[in-house]
Amino acid sequence: MEEQNENRKLTNAELELQADAAGAGEVKRISYAGLIARRFFRQKSAIAGLIVLAVMVLIAVVGPMVCPYDYTEPDFAAINVPPNAQHWFGTDGGGFDLFACVAHGLGRSLVIGISYALLTMIIAAVIGTAIAYVRGWGEKIGMWILDMLLVIPSFLLVAMIVRAASGATGWLILILGLTAFGWIGYARTLRTMALSLRERDYVKAAKYMGVHPMRIIVRHLIPNLGSILIIDTVLGVIAGINSETAYSFLGLGIKSPDTSLGLILSQGSSAMLSGPWIVLIPSLVLVVLCVSMQLIGDGLRDAFDPYSRAAGSVDDDTDDDGDQK
Image (cartoon, rainbow, N blue to C red; front, side, top):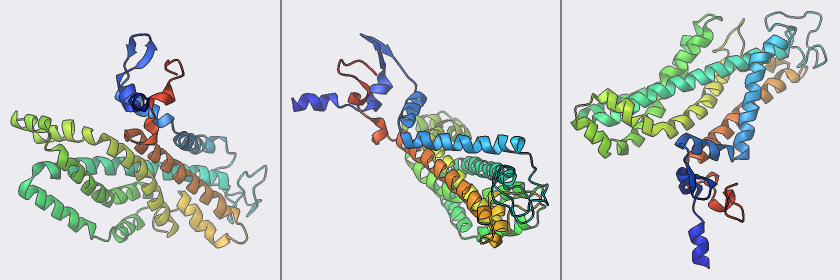
């Protein structure tokens, strides 16, 4: 009896990759992307993170349209007032509507975080896999260059670059500065992951057939690192947002007339006692945003892992009659 129970406890990775039971003897195949999506949406925490992120994006996109005030236009009749029906998040010491500032700042932080994550992953994927593929002296020189770049004081260099930028284009310079040094650590990790891929038979066959090395890297190595790249990209958004917040809080990132969550926290830190909502509200928005991205990242990690709890078992997806739920 125990042997029968053990035989029935197959993982969903085996069941789902083969079929969904649409009827007796009838098989319906699903794609690998569909399998990952099924595992992802099986996790309540991942769904919660996705919903919260959608709400944050909605606030960033629709918030400036529905708010009766602009983040650049102060209301001198309402200076440092707490949240009320007229000013939903209250105002700061300059009379600026805090909801308008948070909505615009949230959008600016998201744009910086997403752009930084995408650019760093693209650069890291190409350079990391290329170093792993070339072998010999090329690989040694590539790793030596990465090691030298890691010891460069990137924080100070990015601060000097962004400090010289204007308020209108500062966020673009900040993205470029963060990307210029943010890809290095990811490239080292991806290079290590690609070492085993370069020994695969299909890579060797493509090489012996005379396929261009860059084509092998783009067509064979990088796609097989897709799960790692997706997870690192999601978590890279958090790193980008936190970096922007740190620079802006210290006065080295986003500058007026533009605004971001870090700049709002920096300007409101001096009024913590007289107007705590000026710091608490954007801080709460920042924490909730980062937590939602972390939940999504954890959900994707478990979705790609065939041995995680998200994979489930046959018993979870079938009823007593053996029919698929």
